[in-house]
Structure formats: C-alpha cells, structure tokens
Image (tube, rainbow, N blue to C red; front, side, top):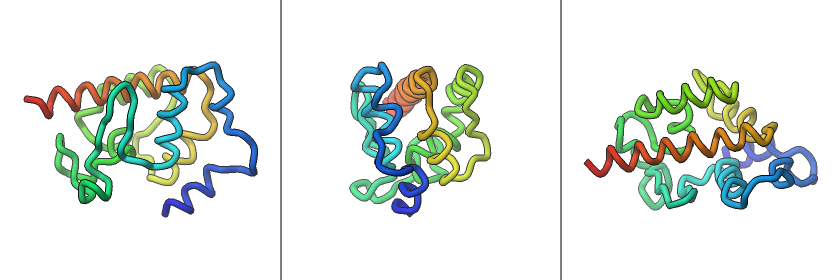
Length: 136
C-alpha cells in the first residue's frame, strides 16, 4: 500500500513544490510526515497516533471506531468535524467521503502556500482537541 501511495504522489525526480515555498521548517516537516504516512506526527509537540506498529494499530482514543491515523483525523473522526469544516471552508480542500488513496494524492501533492498553512492550522487545532479530550 505505501509503495502504491508514494508512486501516485511522486512525479519524476524534481523537488517537491512545498519544499520551495516560504514556509517555516515545522510546516514543511508536517507535510512530509503526512505524505510519508507516518502516524507519529510531530508539529509543535508529538501526537503519537495509535495507528502505528508501536501502538498495535490501535483504534482512535476519541471515537473508538477506526484505526487512529492521519487519514482518520482528516477524514473520519467525528470529534474533528468542526475543525475539518473550518479547513474545508477556508482552503477549499474537501475531505468528506474521500478514499484513502485519493486523500493522499489530492491533498498532499498540489498544495499552495495558503493551503499548507490551513492544513497546519487544522492539525494544531485537532491535536489540541485530542489532548483535551484524552486528558479528561
């Protein structure tokens, strides 16, 4: 699966567009982590999602329905719906009913600077929500 996803993301051997944008390193690193399908995502602080080998590919701590991975946070979990709707309204990116491979291809390849910033804002807000709910 990962090889297929990467092949659909990578076109030729040129530098990825987002790497040449006027973004801080933290934002670039976040997009790289999403593109590489890692579920130990670091942005301002670590968000150790349960959908990885170390955590036994566990289900979401908030809804308990699906494996907790980047796709689940962006497209499925009801606890991030408010943040997801804000992202859709502000960036034009639409994640509703998106299949996993379509999510990887369409979301993290053809981004402009504004969309990268909106994605980073979404992630920050979603992880704050996750921390708050998991703490109490």
